[in-house]
Length: 212
Image 1 (cartoon, rainbow, N blue to C red):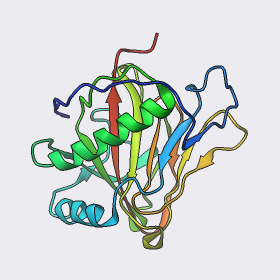
Image 2: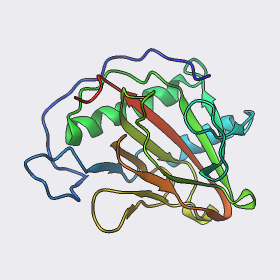
Image 3: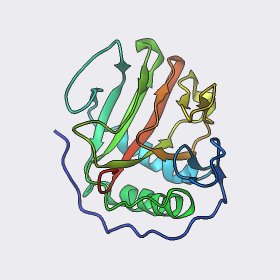
């Protein structure tokens, strides 16, 4: 199963709109349907180093929830990153989480209690992940989700991260290596089928007191 890791407590500051894509236009409640992104959240050289280390790990079939395999909903390979072996990755992404939350969401968040998930979506396996939310009855403490783009857009076709924000059409995120997207864990999102190459990414879940 997924193990836990202890990281420093997150801090919450006031809201500002820099880098925020306010797609719901609800200015009186700016946290609800927004997402936050860093175009170059992680340097390419750092990503390449992470990828080199991850290429030596053994991957398993991606599951829904803790252990359910359903190829009609998800086809991917995954690996959960031990925080002691990948402490530099945890530190880098924790800093980005704090920036995004302090600038946009102002959620009460505390830690990353689940290991970071490395995922590969492979065209020859028709890799995809259908619409889903990251917050579930058994994962009710998830507040924010983060997706880190490890592949460059030239490496694959399809495999687009799309987020439902309440507009008529879902928002399709970019595919540049180093792009980091942060969004509330209750927003529906998906990865469209990969039709060429391999899409590689990291997924991080940030916890806090359950929404009330």
